[in-house]
Structures are given as C-alpha cells and as structure tokens.
Image 1 (cartoon, rainbow, N blue to C red):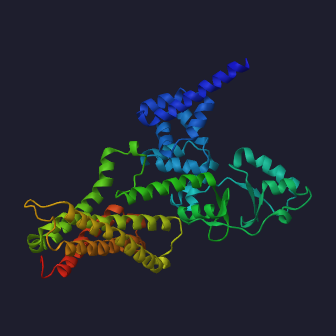
Image 2: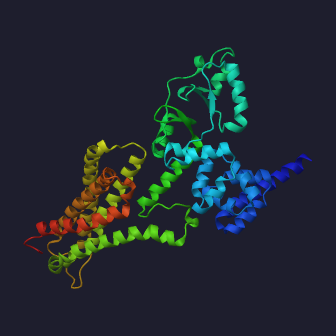
Image 3: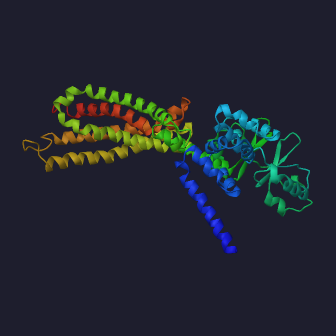
Length: 451
C-alpha cells in the first residue's frame, strides 16, 4: 500500500514536471486544457508558480466559478500583478470576483506604480500592540496566520494610528517569558522602506541586510505592508533581464521571449537598429572625407576594420561594467570622476597591449610575405605604417573606453536609463570617431612619406 502511494506521487510529479517543460510550446487552448487536467493539489502548486501573464491567460479561459476560486487563492500583491497583466477590458470583471476586503486591499496596491515598493508589498502581515503580553501575542498571531498573514517571519508592533513602533521575530517571542510585554521584547532599531522607493533600491537593501521581509511605510510613518524576499527574487530577475536586453541594443520586452508578439518583437529591435544604421552612415561619411589619403596610401584601408573595432570592443566592455556597477549601487553620480581616471588608465594600458600586437603584425607580415611584384609587403616605410597603426589603436581604445564608461553617467543625468548605453550604441559612436583618430594619426606620422 505504501509503495503504491509513493508510485502515485512520483507519477504526479513527473506529469507536473513534463507540463512545466512543455508549457512554452503550448498554445492558449492547450494550456488551459492541460491545467484543468491536473489534480487539485498539483493545479495549486502549478498555478502559484506561474508568471502573472500566464495566470491571467489561464483565468481568462476558465469558467467563472473556477476563475473566482483561483483569483481568491492569491495574496493581494500577487493579485495586483495579475490584474496588471490582464487586458484592460477584462480587469473590471476580474475585480468583481473578489470579496470586499480583498478588493479594498487590491485598490490600495494598484494606486502605486508597479516598480515601487508600494506596488510590491503585501498588505497582509502580523500585527501586534506594544501592551500585549508575549503569550497573548503568540495566540493572536496564531489566529491571524491562516487567512490574514502570508508569512510570519516577523510581527510588526503598531500603535492605534498604525505607526510602526518596533518589530519582533517569531523566534524572539518563543524564547521570551510569556508574561513579558511585547514592547520589552521588540526591536526598535528599524530598517524601513518608503512606499515610493524604486524596486531596484529595495532589492539592494535586501542584499545588504539579508532580511526575509522589510516593512513599507508611507510619508507619515504609517505601516502599509511588507516586501518579502520572494518578491525581490522576481524583481532582481526582471531588472537584470531588462538591463541585459537594453545593453544588447533592444527595447526591454514586456513578456517572455516566446510569448512576445512578432510585431512587438520587431518594434523593440527595429528602433535601435535604425538608430545604429544611421550612425553607421556617419562612419561612411567619415571614410569618404579621407578618400584622398586612402588613394595615396591604399595600404591603410586594410587596417580600418581592425582599428575601429578595437574602440568599439573597449567601449562595450567599459559600458557593460559601469552599467552593472550602477545597477548594483556600487557607483553613484558623484563617482564619475573616479571612473574617468580609472578608465582612462585602463584605456591606455589596453590600447598599448593591442597597439603592440598591431605593430608586430605589420613587422611580421612585412618580413614574411611579399606583394604581387615580389617586393616587401609594406614597402620601405613599413615601420611608419606600424607606428601609425599602433598610435591609432591607442587613441581609439582610449576614446572608446571613455565613451563607454561615461555615457551611462550622461544618460542618467539626463533622466534616461543608463542601460540604454548599449554595447552596439557605444560601438557605433566609437566607429565614427575611430576613423577620425586613425586618419589624424596617419596624416601626422606619414606626412612627407606616403601622404
């Protein structure tokens, strides 16, 4: 009998895992059909693990009674995410499925922006009064927990006006004497979150202090809810995904890759591609302005791609490092000068390494290969050509590095997302200036010989 139960549980787990693996490949009708085929316990586990977009899609295809059941199974903060993922014309019908207390909680949460602490918080948390005894507090929390509290890591001590006075962990309550007052046990040295704090700043607080939850207060110090660690996991993933997409040169996608409409995918990518394409036109114009030099020293043409790509690569590295450091809170606006000095040094060193390789390339090719007439590959002035390449690489690498490092600061100062300083954008900017640097160095070094 026991073996039979274990086999059944194993089969259920396998079926659930198979559905998770196949979920992204199913169309909406198949998803709803597969979901309805799950047993109650499996369906609850699966539904609560879905994204808000998927939950909204499932609810839209269920009968009203089941839709009401599943909507009411969600905590208020998760329910707010679900409503925001639901099409505008269906939100009203969804809200009417809720009981009045839950509806009020939902409306309060929806008043905040999605990326603010108020939009992340859960309004259901353990509340205590300072005058309670520890025994009374434990009994009271036991009554609250089944329906009104999502997590019981901490209980928050409030006065009559809901001002936060202190916090007490469940461990502190269990270890304290039953007759002791909550005010004697609670911690008053508090770390709190303003309800309008950006979600990235909230995630940094969690990373710094390793808390399981943080209280959210309004401007008057009244407690509005708690942000829990599981909410922050989603935030970190969302913010990292958005930054990576922007760094790659696209607009951030609003849904998982396979669920984004093809038209929306094209829009997200086409805008930046058009901007970058126009930037490439400037590179063509820059090259055309040096046609005379190229005609007199055609050997320089072969080095254009190598030199300008060096600037783009250095700039892309610098921008990626700086953007990530800014996202993690490691860099502030006031640090731009330190970044400038650090990256200027890095650009010179990295440029020097690449310049040495470029010079060696010219020397080795000159002594190893010959041109069509059998003469040395780069002619009598091969050392000057090598120095031109080396000097241009140093200049382009330095410039690209500084552009990549400082552009995120400039964008943030102007009110834009620093992640918009994408690697392709930095590379394009470096390409245009790289041509100018290359031919300026060539005109200086080769003047009187090849030019």
